[in-house]
Amino acid sequence: MASHLVVRACPPFRVPVSSGDPLDPASAAATAAAASLLESDARSLLDGPELDRARAMTARTREDFLAGRLAQRRFAAGLLGVPASALTAWYSCPRCGTGTQISHGRPGYLIGGAAAPLLLSLSRAAGWTLLAGIVDPDPALRLGIDVEDPARTDFEGFDAVVLTPAERAHLAALTGTQLLRARARLWARKEAWLKMTGTGLQTAPDTVDVFDDAPDDVLEGDVNGRAGLRDLPPAEAGLPAYLVAAVAVAVYP
Ligand SMILES: CC(C)(COP(=O)(O)OP(=O)(O)OC[C@H]1O[C@@H](n2cnc3c(N)ncnc32)[C@H](O)[C@@H]1OP(=O)(O)O)[C@@H](O)C(=O)NCCC(=O)NCCS
Image (cartoon, rainbow, N blue to C red; front, side, top):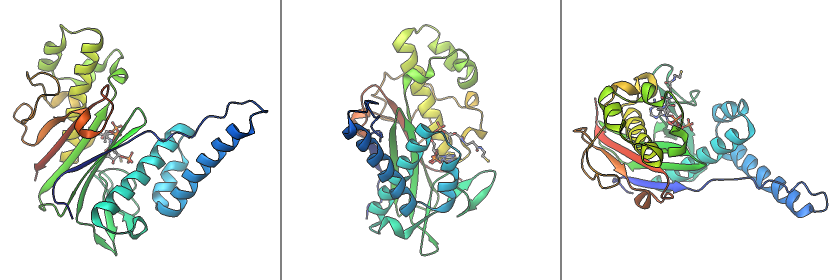
């Protein structure tokens, strides 16, 4: 068993879209087969509250959600050396509490009714699922991971909602791709940090300063003095180069 950080990037799961050509039955059959495999894997491996949560989602969101939850469960089972079917989802929400009926918040699993000795974190962007795990962690250790697609930060109001005044000042001179990448980098750091603390966006992101002067993708140390928070270069994570990721691993009360 590994007690170090393990990170895995899972490529987008996509049900192939049927060509719509009634003379192309192979295309329609491939679509139906992929969708049905995802649904049957989900029904056989995921827990009731996870399936209930998926039921309320639109088709594409549901696909990403189910594929991510299946990937997370298989990842956790692989790290623990147990079958995926031996795990029961056991989530913690800062508002709703912890339990097998909770299907949102910080991820975790039970094995045979006891907490699995595993820290987990998950993030999705552009169809990709990024997973992080640490087996047999120190009891006070916490983990958070986040991946962002810079294109998703291209909207008015991003800076006002997400950035601290100091961060806004630093980004003021940037435009185009550079600006979007810089926004995504700060956003990924904030979300990795807030998943690590467990509060998520119940802590306003514009109160969490994660700006650092170091150039992109070379920041190996702690971001802005936050011990354990660092950028995760796409090549290290197994992600495509256009995505931006960060990870936080720290002892947190
Ligand atoms: C988690 C969050 C910071 C980032 O989410 P995002 O950018 O939309 O999505 P990501 O793909 O990066 O991350 C989603 C994952 O974060 C994890 N997560 C959610 N809340 C978390 C928390 N409080 N602590 C740690 N991890 C958390 C889950 O694994 C979730 O995966 P899921 O969709 O399979 O449940 C944000 O969505 C959030 O804070 N949500 C919760 C808000 C809240 O507490 N609401 C109260 C509910 S009662």
